[in-house]
Amino acid sequence: MDTVALRYAEALFSLASDKNSIIAYQEEANGLKEVLLENKEFIDLLSSPFLSVQSRIDKVEKTFSYLSQDLLAFICIIVKNSRSEMILDILEAFNSLCNRSQGILEGIIYSTEIMDKSLLANIEARIGEIEKSKVHLINKIDPSLIGGFKVLINDHQYDNSISKTIEKLRKSLIGR
Image (cartoon, rainbow, N blue to C red; front, side, top):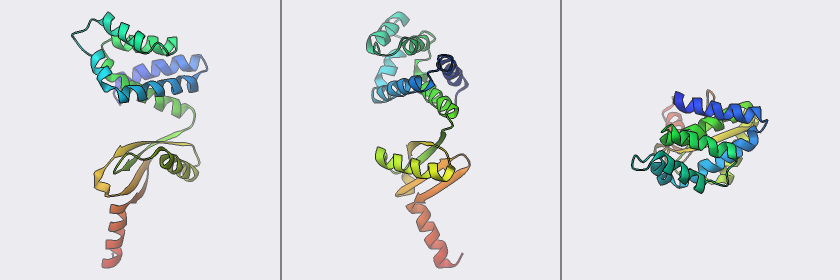
């Protein structure tokens, strides 16, 4: 994680913590992150050297007028400081800080395609039982798996991929 993104995330986390609103801020920031992920060209617009800083801030204020004053002001600070290209990293780091404060373990689940949300929730619940903690997994694509999935959380790896199954079968057939 970029140290600059982490510093911004820590500042927002500190604000959320001071207001005893970590979960509310996290939900709002995650909603914003989803919108930005679906509209990455907006981040490019906010990073454009062809627009004045004030013009970029006006666009943020108009587009995200539904956000709380604190989060809106925070995004404007990011834009003023020419860190717009880091918004997604900052929001991801903020989410991680919020999860950590709530005792939620974070991990990565690799699959050959984006997983259905209900399947992902079921896997999170099952691994949460094993880890004895609530778990949040980020889905990433790994075409080398052929099929199935692989989860990395803390220092544990849960491998339910076809490539792992084939490897186990190969080893059992050759007696190793």
